[in-house]
Image (cartoon, rainbow, N blue to C red; front, side, top):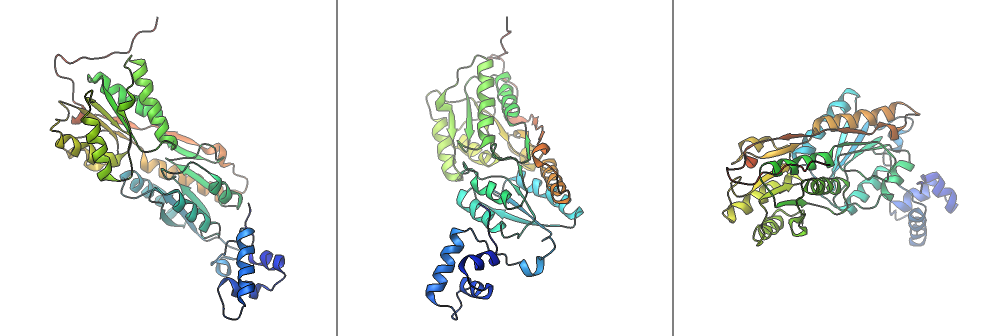
Amino acid sequence: MKNINIKELACELKLSVSTISKALHDSHEISEHTKRRVQETAARLNYVPNPYASSLRGRKSKNIGVVIPEVADSFFSLAINGIESVAKENGYHVLICLTHESFENEKTILKEFQGRRVDGVLLSVSRETSKSDHINELISNGVPVVFFDRVCDEVQTAKITTDDFESSYKATEHLIHQGCDKIAFLGISKTLSISNKRLEGYLKALKEYKIKADRKHILLCTDDTKQNYLLIKKLLQQVNSPNGIVASVEKLTTPVYKACVSMKLKIPEDIKVVCFSNLETASILSPSLTTITQPAFEMGRSAAKLLFKALQKTNFNLNEGSLVIPSALVVRGSTSKAKKGMPVFSKPVLQ
């Protein structure tokens, strides 16, 4: 539903623009009855106030919004660097907003952006996001949106992603080659596209190497580090406990290592670990961490370049700008080669 401006709201209510403005600002000059009538109609017709209207009339805000789940994850920090490098080249400022993995926060932020506080938005959705009406509404109000990393597949716009399915397959296959036959997968969402693709890649690798997937080894983690530690520890306490782990997000690195220490499990002797991570400290952990390293800076930069093309070219079609940038498997100590005598699996030859 397209939002209306204050003049249209005034016309609908047959009141002056001044009266509407005063009512919305709770002025003592306006009766409670009129205030209530204005507020109810404004909500019904999707009126979004534009605090920048007087200063931005006839020109752009020169801001772009970047909406992300968090900044603690090194992926997003690197992606922001890539975004800012492009924004600076174009004379724009970057407004960074955090959803803290909340769908409601995400909706509120995008609602505020309908007031033209920003000229365009770069978005990586929250772990709770399963609907896209709020995103489509923003786009319908003339604010271009480009996804990066976490996307909504059903929204018709550009998406800058990495090869999540292939990377997870590669991580699982690496563990299999290192002798692991009981591999756990740690995810964070049942709805996120990247989580589902990484799960699918994991399952595909197990299937192709004739290793039966154990549903007890597929763990849905939370946004709480302490809770994740307890969940992973419980996983490792199973009778048929895993000897390999694919952790689908960086934040799971610490609880995995802590749980192994608590259980007196040695990495990589007792259990091997691969994590999707861009941590600079991965190489100095004990043992050093084998990672699927995402092209975070390049993804952020590519997403920003597409957004600015849309802002600069009237008829630019964002739907045609989607891009997949491959990640890399970086092998380190947490998956060192199998000891002599451990099983080594190879992919069956198709007849």
